[in-house]
Structures are given as structure tokens and as C-alpha cells.
Length: 220
Image (cartoon, rainbow, N blue to C red):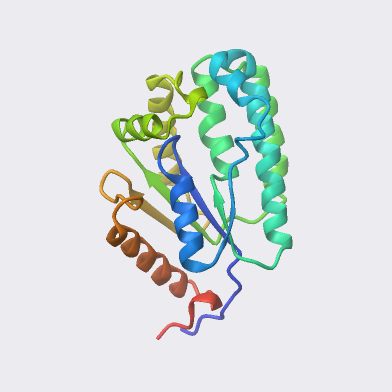
């Protein structure tokens, strides 16, 4: 069956803290000449406070990220370039917010309000053309967090990371909004081994061709 070529606009990378999203986004952008939209960490006014007192600042932090991610998506959909996004809006709602609520770090009232806002927002945008999920063990996450040495991340609790990983696995099992590529970070060291990055790029190219994106040529 002939597939009608379509414009590739939005690649998104999902994964726990320390999984390597920024590194992979930058590498793929260089390889495919994409534009990167990074997670707004440097300008986030709540992040350091959140890691010092999660219960006090959880709702503020999640609302900031939700708004920031939504603005990114609108820019992507209105623009003409292909963008790779470092973290998705779905993770805010399906991973981080419910994990905070379950841990008792976000009140039920705030969590319900947050979910209501997300449902409203999610009706206003399309899912990414390709979602790349970086799956990593807790040991790998901790090692990579320590390696990059961000001061505000030094107080991240292991149980917090473990809870996030559980929610990630449940979310990915049911993700059906579009093409999905799962990358095993424990096996693929794309930061240090060029051959691993090459394999990931080859898989991405094949998947995008199969889904008829003009930027990656027509199917043979």
C-alpha cells in the first residue's frame, strides 16, 4: 500500500531523571539537522526549592512544567522545522504528578486540579510523530545523575526515582498515540559509543520511513 509522505515536525524523548534525554536529543539533532527544544531547567524558578521541600513546591513545579511544555508544543505545531523535544508533556501528567500524589507530596485537591487542567490542554495538541523512551535501571540513573553533578539533584531520593520508573513502565505499556521506540539505556551507551548511536539512528530512520515521512524518503 502506498503511503502518502507527510512533514515530520515533532520527535519527543521521554525518560526518567538521568536517563540521557538531553544527550540523545543533542546527538540526534546533530545527526538529522533537527532543532532541539530543551526542558526549561535553568530558568525554572521552583526547581531548587522543590528538591529541598518537595511537599511545599510540588504543585508549583508541575504547573510550571505543564505550561512550559504546552508552549513548546504550540511552537512546534505552528513552526516549519523538525523539532526534537527533551521530555514530553505526557510525562508531567502521567508520571511526575501521580508519583508525587502517591508519595504524599501533592495533595489530592492539587492533584485533581492539575489533572483537570491537563485534560483541557491535551485536547488542543497532536501527539509527537515519534516517541523515544529511554528505559534505565535505578543504578544507571543514579550513576548518570552523579556524573553530571548538578547541585540541586544531589538530594534526589532513590525511592522517588523508583516510583517514577514504575509509572514510566505502566505508561509505556499503554501508550498508543503514535510510533514508539524503546531504547535500553543499560545496553546502549549512545553518549560514549558511536556504534550504539549509529544503531539508534538507523532504527529511527527505518521507523520514520515506514510511517511515510517525506524527510526520510519514500519506502523502497
